[in-house]
Length: 124
Ligand code: SF4
Image (tube, rainbow, N blue to C red; front, side):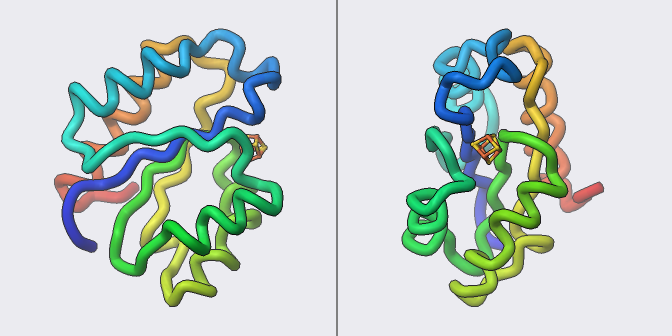
Protein backbone atom coordinates (compact mmCIF):
# COMPACT_ATOMS: atom_id res chain seq x y z
CA UNK A 1 0.00 0.00 0.00
CA UNK A 2 1.31 3.44 -0.86
CA UNK A 3 1.24 6.71 1.05
CA UNK A 4 -1.25 8.00 3.53
CA UNK A 5 -4.84 6.76 3.52
CA UNK A 6 -7.68 8.67 1.87
CA UNK A 7 -10.79 9.24 3.96
CA UNK A 8 -14.10 8.91 2.08
CA UNK A 9 -17.27 9.72 3.97
CA UNK A 10 -20.64 8.52 2.69
CA UNK A 11 -23.45 10.46 4.30
CA UNK A 12 -26.43 8.40 3.08
CA UNK A 13 -27.99 11.37 1.17
CA UNK A 14 -27.89 13.50 4.31
CA UNK A 15 -31.41 12.31 5.19
CA UNK A 16 -30.63 9.09 7.06
CA UNK A 17 -31.50 9.25 10.78
CA UNK A 18 -28.37 7.17 11.49
CA UNK A 19 -26.21 10.23 10.86
CA UNK A 20 -28.33 12.83 12.58
CA UNK A 21 -25.93 13.16 15.55
CA UNK A 22 -22.96 13.70 13.27
CA UNK A 23 -21.75 17.12 12.16
CA UNK A 24 -20.44 16.11 8.73
CA UNK A 25 -18.33 19.17 8.01
CA UNK A 26 -16.81 19.28 11.46
CA UNK A 27 -15.81 15.62 11.07
CA UNK A 28 -14.35 16.10 7.59
CA UNK A 29 -12.43 19.20 8.59
CA UNK A 30 -11.04 17.60 11.72
CA UNK A 31 -9.97 14.47 9.82
CA UNK A 32 -8.17 16.47 7.11
CA UNK A 33 -6.59 18.92 9.56
CA UNK A 34 -5.66 16.67 12.48
CA UNK A 35 -4.96 13.23 11.04
CA UNK A 36 -2.25 12.00 8.65
CA UNK A 37 -4.55 11.42 5.68
CA UNK A 38 -3.80 12.42 2.09
CA UNK A 39 -7.18 14.19 2.08
CA UNK A 40 -10.82 13.72 3.11
CA UNK A 41 -13.84 13.83 0.83
CA UNK A 42 -17.63 13.32 0.99
CA UNK A 43 -19.92 11.34 -1.31
CA UNK A 44 -23.68 11.55 -0.80
CA UNK A 45 -24.60 7.94 -1.60
CA UNK A 46 -21.90 5.45 -2.58
CA UNK A 47 -24.15 2.41 -2.94
CA UNK A 48 -26.10 3.56 -6.01
CA UNK A 49 -25.09 3.84 -9.67
CA UNK A 50 -23.16 7.09 -9.44
CA UNK A 51 -21.32 5.68 -6.42
CA UNK A 52 -20.21 2.77 -8.61
CA UNK A 53 -19.13 5.20 -11.29
CA UNK A 54 -17.27 7.22 -8.67
CA UNK A 55 -15.28 4.16 -7.46
CA UNK A 56 -14.49 3.15 -11.05
CA UNK A 57 -13.14 6.64 -11.76
CA UNK A 58 -11.46 7.24 -8.44
CA UNK A 59 -10.09 4.06 -6.88
CA UNK A 60 -6.51 3.06 -7.65
CA UNK A 61 -4.81 -0.24 -6.88
CA UNK A 62 -2.39 -0.01 -3.97
CA UNK A 63 -4.08 2.95 -2.26
CA UNK A 64 -5.79 2.61 1.12
CA UNK A 65 -9.27 4.07 1.60
CA UNK A 66 -10.88 4.52 4.98
CA UNK A 67 -14.60 4.65 4.29
CA UNK A 68 -16.95 6.12 6.87
CA UNK A 69 -20.45 4.87 6.11
CA UNK A 70 -22.68 1.98 7.18
CA UNK A 71 -22.23 -1.71 8.05
CA UNK A 72 -18.78 -2.97 6.91
CA UNK A 73 -20.26 -6.21 5.54
CA UNK A 74 -22.68 -4.21 3.41
CA UNK A 75 -19.87 -1.96 2.24
CA UNK A 76 -17.90 -5.01 1.16
CA UNK A 77 -20.88 -6.39 -0.72
CA UNK A 78 -21.57 -3.06 -2.42
CA UNK A 79 -18.04 -1.92 -3.30
CA UNK A 80 -15.93 -5.05 -3.88
CA UNK A 81 -16.87 -5.44 -7.56
CA UNK A 82 -15.80 -1.88 -8.32
CA UNK A 83 -12.40 -2.56 -6.73
CA UNK A 84 -12.03 -5.82 -8.62
CA UNK A 85 -12.86 -4.01 -11.85
CA UNK A 86 -9.95 -1.57 -11.41
CA UNK A 87 -7.54 -4.39 -10.59
CA UNK A 88 -7.71 -3.68 -6.87
CA UNK A 89 -8.91 -5.60 -3.85
CA UNK A 90 -11.53 -4.34 -1.42
CA UNK A 91 -10.21 -6.48 1.45
CA UNK A 92 -6.67 -5.16 1.04
CA UNK A 93 -7.50 -1.56 0.30
CA UNK A 94 -10.61 -0.55 2.20
CA UNK A 95 -11.09 -0.09 5.91
CA UNK A 96 -14.87 0.16 6.19
CA UNK A 97 -16.13 1.94 9.30
CA UNK A 98 -19.69 2.03 10.54
CA UNK A 99 -20.11 5.61 11.74
CA UNK A 100 -23.87 5.52 12.20
CA UNK A 101 -25.46 6.57 15.47
CA UNK A 102 -22.33 8.31 16.68
CA UNK A 103 -21.54 11.81 17.82
CA UNK A 104 -18.96 13.75 15.84
CA UNK A 105 -16.38 13.08 18.54
CA UNK A 106 -17.08 9.33 18.58
CA UNK A 107 -16.87 9.16 14.79
CA UNK A 108 -13.62 11.13 14.80
CA UNK A 109 -12.12 8.69 17.30
CA UNK A 110 -13.09 5.73 15.10
CA UNK A 111 -11.43 7.35 12.10
CA UNK A 112 -8.37 8.25 14.16
CA UNK A 113 -7.96 4.64 15.30
CA UNK A 114 -8.29 3.41 11.71
CA UNK A 115 -5.69 5.89 10.47
CA UNK A 116 -3.31 4.80 13.23
CA UNK A 117 -3.81 1.16 12.23
CA UNK A 118 -2.98 1.97 8.62
CA UNK A 119 0.07 4.03 9.52
CA UNK A 120 1.42 1.35 11.83
CA UNK A 121 0.58 -1.47 9.43
CA UNK A 122 -1.89 -3.14 11.82
CA UNK A 123 -5.22 -3.51 10.06
CA UNK A 124 -7.30 -5.39 12.63
S1 SF4 B 1 -23.17 3.11 1.35
FE1 SF4 B 1 -24.20 2.90 3.32
S2 SF4 B 1 -24.02 4.94 4.27
FE2 SF4 B 1 -23.63 5.17 2.06
S3 SF4 B 1 -25.64 5.66 1.17
FE3 SF4 B 1 -25.37 3.46 1.01
S4 SF4 B 1 -26.39 2.66 2.84
FE4 SF4 B 1 -26.01 4.84 3.22
